[in-house]
Length: 248
Image (cartoon, rainbow, N blue to C red; front, side, top):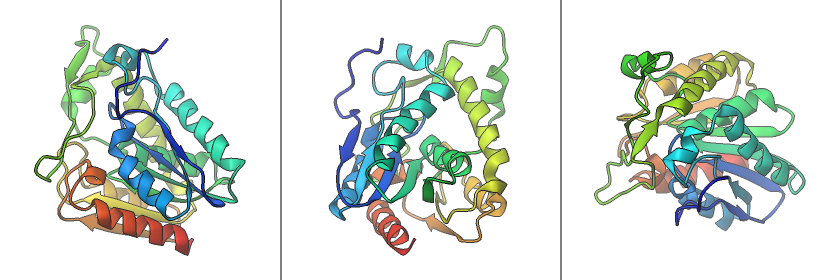
């Protein structure tokens, strides 16, 4: 049983018109990081769902017990909520949430009309983390990577450390998603910060190259780090995302 939810980490749902958008946060993060985007989409009249992924926004003990299948189920619940209300469903996500936009575009092509992955990750290029995956005496946690924000005073609600057991799950679902990229055919707006201290910025061009979609665009952010949805370029992300959804 998960503990109490941190203030600000609550899931959100906004009922609107027949266009639905799922907005997902990332690994160790919370809905706080994507709520402004969700609210901007809702203000345009869209129906919006922001799930709190299992094990997130409560305690690191909860997070340590969660895995990729749990996070997938969290998203599936909100996709089901959108599916019965909307004629069209889009998926936007930050970091691992962006990765899940790719994953679900491949797994649910019948439902996902378009995707907006923001600083999504299909590889980390981090040997130190890779060494931990099958290490018998791996530590229980490693230092966190939260609040990678360029804007002065910007802060992300995130766990201070990363539990290692779900890190293994994260690494696995990333590799699965990488292999799924060529079968994704829906329109994609790939948003990537030029400077990112959590996810290699090369993910953006790499995803673009492997995506099967004939309709894809890469937008590069010059004034934001990893948590771009809480950074200087957030208004631009809102504007580009709304424009993309209206055009598709």
